[in-house]
Length: 81
Figure 1: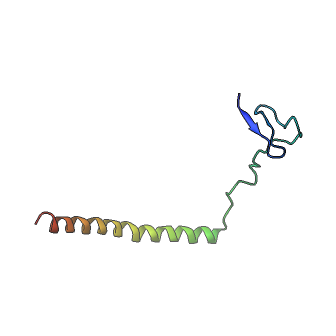
Figure 2 (figure 1 turned 120 degrees about the horizontal axis):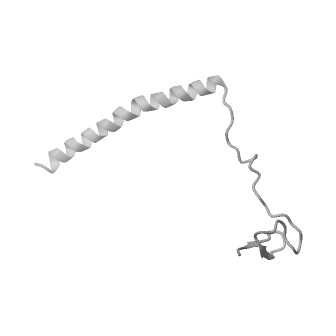
Figure 3 (figure 1 turned 120 degrees about the vertical axis):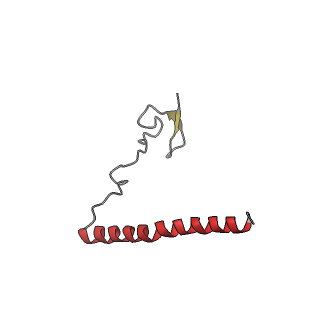
């Protein structure tokens, strides 16, 4: 049995009950309709985001590979000397 704390009056009551037995305040449950962050984008915004992510990929992957080669070269140059 787990207990729930009433945010209105401070009474501890059984979690299975829907409302507080002392003040009859309903248990606060999140309104899932308000928590939805999905929204539809218009075509222009979707195209802009798609283009931006492709540019990041085209620049980011070769830059990451270059950093790995540079690190390997520096390790080979200084450690294996």
